[in-house]
Image (cartoon, rainbow, N blue to C red):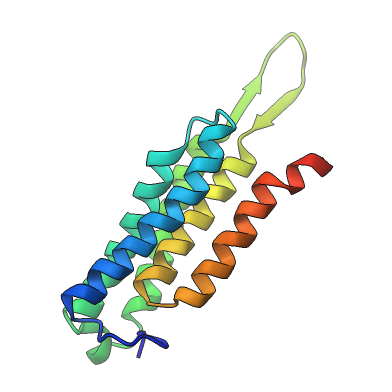
Length: 150
């Protein structure tokens, strides 16, 4: 079902350790880059977001609820996305100073990085290592390399 191309069944302890380990690894890579840029949401935040997303997806997989109710994973991913939206909004800083009459918005990239970390946790929980490794590499390149083009 959601185990993708895994060699391990989703209910095996080793599989759980690997899935959660990948979630932490993915979040750590994004978080390390944000930490090096001096952003408030850094290493630990991204690891926790990725791990939390993975845990929420793994619960119905482990309880085999997803087999009985196929839309369970979809609903959980929708809930995670909504929750991460609030976390990302907290990362965005809006300053309306009365003197300047200008709106300054900061933190959009950091909010997007939190969103990506969450998606990477979901990918790890589903056992889609290949998509996760490709995606985390692309996200890291976007954050690290493409910043030079701004």
